[in-house]
Image (tube, rainbow, N blue to C red; front, side, top):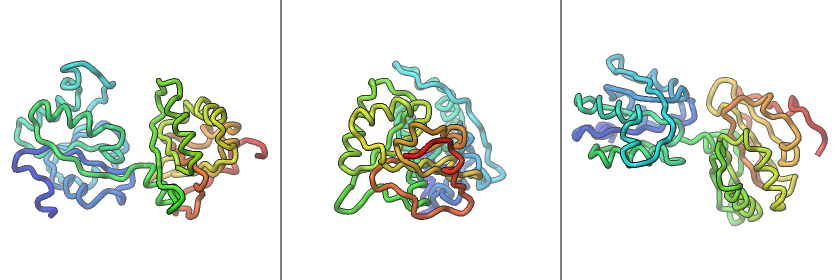
Amino acid sequence: MIQQMAEHGENRILIVGTGPGDPELLTVRGAAAIRQAEVILYDCGTVEPVLALASERAAIVRVDRSPYETGEGCREQTPMIVAIREYRKKGLRVVRLKTGDPALFGGEVDEGDVLTRLGIPWAAVPGVSAGAAAASAYALPISRKFESDAVLNIIAAAITDDFALIRDAARLLGHGAAVVFYMATANLPGILRTFREAGVPDGTPVVAVSKVGWPGEAFVETTLGRLGREEFSAVLPEPVVYHIGRYVRVRNVPAGSKELSGKVRGGAE
C-alpha cells in the first residue's frame, strides 16, 4: 500500500494533511508521502515539525501565502498554484503540505478545483484537525450515544452573515450538539451575545485549548457565562480551539499541557 502511496506514475500532486503540529499525529500515509517527495511546498509554519521526515535530497520551499481571490483565472495565479505548476513541469514528485486536515474548511477543495481546471492530477491525504486532536487528547465527550450525534465545526475569523450561522449553532447546542470554533477569539463577544440572545444557558461548558499538539499547549475549562467575563486572550496564545456543549468536560490532561483556568481573571458564576 505504501509503495503505491505516491501515485506519481502520472505525476500526481499530493496534498497532505499534517495535523495540528505534533509529528506523532501525522498519518502513516502522510509520512510516506513526505519521505518520497522530491519537492515539498508549504505556506504555514505549523507544518514545519514534519519536515524532519523529508529526504535530504528534497527541495523544501516555503511559499508566500496569498489572500483568497475570486474570479475566473485569479486562483491560477496564486503563489502556491504557480509553484506547483513550475515543479510539476520538471517531472518532480510534489507534495503540498496543509495544516490539520486538507478537506476541512475547503483548503484542499479550493486548490483541487484549480488543479483539476488546469488538467493537473492530484490526490489528498487526510490529516487530524486541531479540534479532533484536542477532543481526543482531553477525552472531551463532544458526542454522546443515543443523546447527541452532532458536532459542528465553525471558522469564526470573519463573520459576514450577521451571526446567522451562530444562531443556527445555538439551536444545535439546544439539542445537545457540540460546537467547535476555530479562529474565534476576536469575534467571541458577538458569538456569546448571540448565544445569550438565543437562550443558550450561561452554564454551558466550554473547553478552550491553545496550541494543540505544540510545545506550550495549554487549556482552560470554564462556562459560556464566565467566558464572556474573563480575559482568556491574555493567557491563551493563539491558535485556540473552543469546544462548547452540554456534555463537554475534560476527562484527561495530556502530558505537558498546562491548565490556566486559575490564572484567568473573573468572578464567580
